[in-house]
Image (cartoon, rainbow, N blue to C red; front, side, top):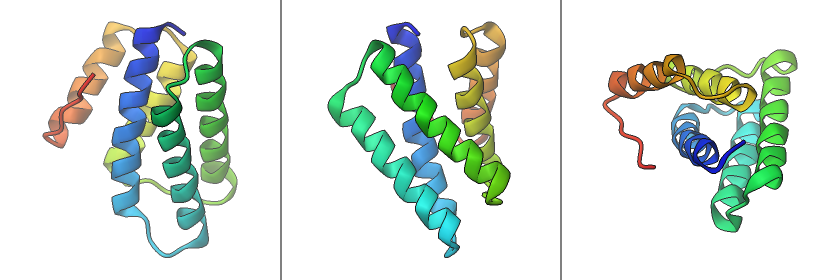
Length: 116
């Protein structure tokens, strides 16, 4: 994926990580997933991966979180869930107006802003 799409995904992952860490409870799956997300997002920020290495790291994170959702009953609050759906969709397709409007809706609903 191109650099601008990678920046968008990283920004969304940072926002998702903040949101998810506020919603976790004491369940083992929530704690483990929170550690995975924090570690992965921090690594993406610190090492500033680009190109196919960035894509690989993001896809690994998406697969692990989706596995936890499907098989370990990981649940997101509404805001985290909407962010995660967009992260998953953006990683699969080219950015479109539909995605842009979805993101505007998500962030307006929480009075949050994206810093790209």
